[in-house]
Length: 485
Ligand SMILES: Cc1cc2nc3c(=O)[nH]c(=O)nc-3n(C[C@H](O)[C@H](O)[C@H](O)COP(=O)(O)OP(=O)(O)OC[C@H]3O[C@@H](n4cnc5c(N)ncnc54)[C@H](O)[C@@H]3O)c2cc1C
Image 1 (cartoon, helix red, strand yellow):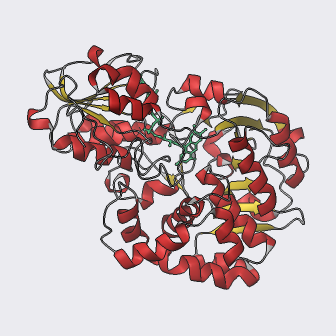
Image 2 (image 1 turned 60 degrees about the horizontal axis):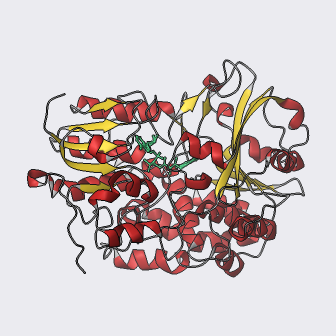
Image 3 (image 1 turned 120 degrees about the vertical axis):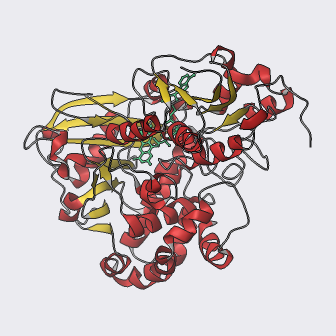
């Protein structure tokens, strides 16, 4: 490795890789250090159950990769990424044997929602038509939007809670349930603002670009990002957990793809006490409890629409989902959890032996929850797919502690990089004009604990790299300076 480097990135999650790529594209010498033996952070695959079954350890479905402005500009296909688009984006089964369905087309989704169709078209249609312009304004730090009228059209409904919007716009059980399921991705009580922001973004992104998966597994996306990074001259080292930024190779700047807690552990001695104190107040949300299944056949959903959807929202009505999503914030778990389920092998046979299948599901539980939700999750799936349990060949259970052990960014099992309520959605990890910077001009934060938050889109890394580029010419890592303002 040639020294001195322009930048070292700690962590090879999608944001660490995005930061590395954005810097290397500008001619910087960049080295990424990853603690795990493999690269990818939340974008990895592994053999978690039986031979021949490839599971995505974390993420599987990528509504934001193609909808946001950085990753979609990269030559991912050249490096082996083949997108798999399930015919339907989301299915939401109900007890009467039907399912609400989020389809690629706004029109078809609206039609399937019956009397709620008109409201869906009115809410989503104009925004989905301008998805790319909207995303360019939304996925990043808080700034004056370039398309103010469009941003306002998005912002007014987005500021509502998931439940508030569902009850204001939709009348039917199916319409309300579909919205509740989308809002549950925000990992907020459905009564809390701005839960509808995430629901809107996911719907708009889906109508514009789908909710694709990667053929062969998530790891192929991480590997393609790494291959592109290396083609630009970047280097990656795996199997080295960093305990202090002092242990890193000399570089003008360091970008940390880690949680605020780890920023303190790694760089706290190089940061002013006031800033460290504010980082220490950063709030993590509920944990995830995840189960990966190897199955003898496709999940026998009662509602046939579920068989053509990559993602299935298993949780019944708005009221049930509201209770399930409120519970973890109140330190309790429910017997009927809301299960986010993904079934990749239905659309990508390379994931499992012929005729057999993989699926994963997770539900939200209190941060650091030590109980076992396996039985409750499988009962919920069985409710809408009788015979599911008989198909289970093997399962791998990951409770919040296991998720955190696997990736220390997931504090207490929080997979979103911190709560995304109004108090933290723009001001993560602390309120600062440029949230990717720290008071130390050589230290930057690029993880999902910066705007725009969780999910695989790389925008946190991209924006952190833009901030770092301003400092690279003459910014060696310095001692802490008193914080101003
Ligand atoms: C179970 C689960 C399911 C998910 N499903 C989806 C989904 O379907 N779609 C979606 O868009 N998002 C999903 N997500 C969220 C998504 O994976 C994350 O938001 C995203 O990966 C965050 O990216 P990141 O680069 O900020 O951090 P991470 O992906 O967490 O990467 C951080 C990397 O840094 C490394 N690291 C941490 N500390 C150190 C250290 N001290 N030294 C060296 N290396 C270190 C870690 O090993 C890790 O590789 C899911 C997450 C989980 C856990």
